[in-house]
Image (cartoon, rainbow, N blue to C red; front, side, top):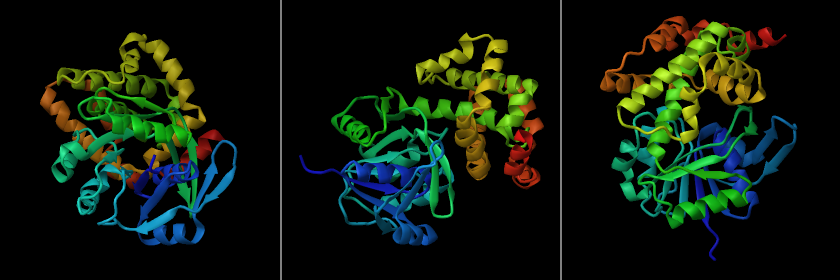
Length: 330
């Protein structure tokens, strides 16, 4: 079988990590980068450091400056923040030779903008299973659960199964979603209340874990956000998220406090919120529109918003949030 070609568009933590893993699995990989990141990758290769083990690897992935307009790739995996999507789409649509674009950005709006730019038949969506941050040209990363992939119509197409098999060969587990649009919206419904709770506690998972009242409010806010989506007709996806309603609040709060003290909460939650405030602000605005459409009361979410303060003011308000979190763990 002809070796599959994959373009990773976006050379941050996730793009760098997945491109290196795919390259090491024997696939023909290119990584699109810009400016200083392009120079770093050209000089050093993809430098990865595992948060858990401290192991550092260097992978000589092919690096492309910007979007190649004429080259064929079987898949283009798009790994940019939601705030960068509109600009990215202008570059992506210049290449008419790529049959499948896989978008892994957060969104509460659905795939409409992607479909308009590229055509419905060329759009697939997914969600990453890793997190981390960059330290100079080194990517610090942690892989958690399985990646999620899905076609817009929920079908398990040959191209979907082929891509999942490719990720599996690279050591990345994959789950399929029958309703990837709902999946992405429910992820935002989790993220928005959690962001409020975090911003109310110096964007520090450890401080939030010690504040039982705000932790409980965060979980109740998630329930309110889920009710918004249910009112709009979006089924709970993935189905395991029904535990939000099934487990009594006092038990769920205790469990969540424990989760907040883990390395996953630090790397995958707190650090991401500290490093992606502009994206979180946009997702909050998107979800506010869904609340208005649903006409559902969200009193706890509203109170959490006030406790957190505006995300605009918090951007410069918290004394370096990383320092605040370090101080609480000392």
